[in-house]
Each structure stands twice: as C-alpha cells, then as structure tokens.
Image 1 (cartoon, rainbow, N blue to C red):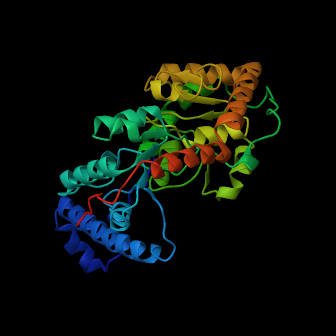
Image 2 (image 1 turned 60 degrees about the vertical axis):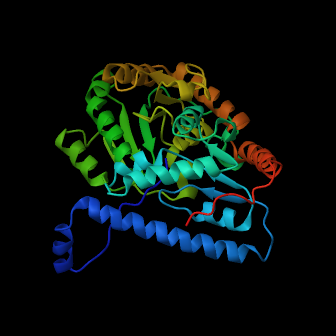
Image 3 (image 1 turned 90 degrees about the vertical axis):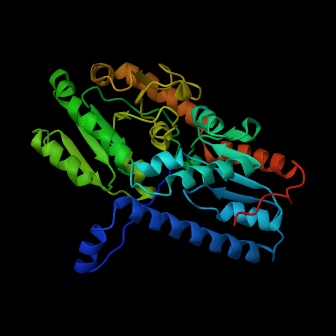
Length: 355
C-alpha cells in the first residue's frame, strides 16, 4: 500500500494554535498544492538532466498529486510506465481531507490514461483502475516479491509446543484497524490455546494506541510489540513466528508481508478475496478466513495453532510459491517484458504536457 504523507509541519506553539483555526480541508489544500508544484519543478529538472543520456522511457511509482513522471515523459516525448500500488485518492482520505480532492481524482485519471503501461500488484487493483478510467490494455500485474536470498532453502520445522502468531509491517491507519481486530479476537484464541502468544513487529503512528488497548484488555502477558525492525533484520525477526496473520486487507491488495512470511516458510492466515485467490491458492498456499468475521478468524488461527502437520503443509506450500513466482528475479523478468512492449508501442511525442 502506498504511503501518502499527511500534511504536518513543526511550528512554534503560537503558530500551531493559529494553524488550528484554519479549516482542515484548507490545510489539506495547501499541502496538495505544494506537492503539485514541487512535482512540476522536479519533472522539469528531471527532464533536463535526462537529456544528457537520451532516455527511452520514464518509470515512476505514482504518488498522490505528483505529475513529475508525466511531465518528464511528455517533455522528452517518451513513454511513461507508471507503477500504481493503491487507489491513491481513497488512501489519502484516510489520512487527511482537502478541498482539492476532485483535482486529485482527475490527476490520477489523467496519469492512468497517459501511461503506456500501468504496473500494479494484483488483478483486483488492476480492475479497480480500469473502472476509474485506466485503459485495460495497459494494465499489467507484477505482484510484490522478495530478494531471492531471503527465500529459505528448506521448509520450516514445526514445534507443536510453540504457537506464536505474528504480524509485521508499518502500522498505518488501515493496519492499526486490522490489528485492533486481532487484539479483539485474541482472548478467544487464548481460551482455546492457552500457550499461544502474539507478536507485532513494526512501528507507526498508532502503535501507542494499540499498546494501550492491549494493556487495557489485560493481554500484555500474551502480546508483545517489538517496535521498528530494520529491513535486513526482517528474516531474523520472523524466526520466532509460527503462524503469520493478516487480520484484514483491502480486497484488491497483495501484501508484501504475505511474501515475506512465505519466504521464511511461515504459514499465513489471511482474509479470502477473489484478487488474492488469483495469485495464491486458498487452502494450499494460505489459510483463508471470512473477512471481518471474528469467529472465522478465531477458528482458523486456533486450527493452525493446534495442528502442526497442517502448519507444515501450508508453510511449505507458500514457500514453494514464493520461490517459483514471487522473487525479484520473477518480477524483473516481467518488468523487462513490460518495458520492451512500452518501447515498441509507437510514437509518444504527442503526450500531453501537464501545466
């Protein structure tokens, strides 16, 4: 899921008080205008610098209110390949509101329509983008992947006496909502599996609120928060987890944490969705539950916690899937094909130059 920065600025106390008198959507408007103007300047500077090596294509990860890639590609008369990892206007609204939201939607549609190719992580997200105006023939799925050297060589050994249920990621607002759901079902899991433990790996804006919820629920002995973990230390951090859990996810997502768990040979419990099932096999490469249903999540977690053989089968299944389909080697090959097709797509010199 893409990161869309919330408009925040460190100000003296007096200015902070004055800023609070400005309506939130006006503050959001100022933020969006700043991003738009900065991306316009950057797009011009990038195009000028690029002339020195005569590029054939611009590849950009789309960010909300950024027109840098679109502008650079139009200036140079070359195709734009746009990586899109979410419904950016929708994602932004979970963090802040702005008077410029209609413009944000229009800009995303313009980028999607202008791109020679749109790279996205799941079939579900691809369908959403087409519904929002992207040209179907330009949308290509390249799922999240991991470095080949992070993929375990052997299936993970299972210890029946251990039942550590884990989550990893940066705790954005939608992740915090999902983790609150997990905390709410934890007592039922512990009632059925008293030796179970929960580990939350990562940090983010709502970490403190989650810690307070755990404490207020009396779950502190069974739930541990590790805080921030460096990227290179993720495999080590995952070593203690027996069952990975994704308590909730957008129905069009393909979470990188799923692939990280799989690379470590850890079985994963995740909410079932058509988009997810188009990329991994339910019951073979992950354990599905009914999204938003606490009883279904509890039943699935308890079943895996008590069934070491089932954990081993699912962990091996997801490990094999990651090794075969979800490494940087696979995504690199796919991107090379996409770039080749974009370059063969004809004259892009008439691409609109956003002003």
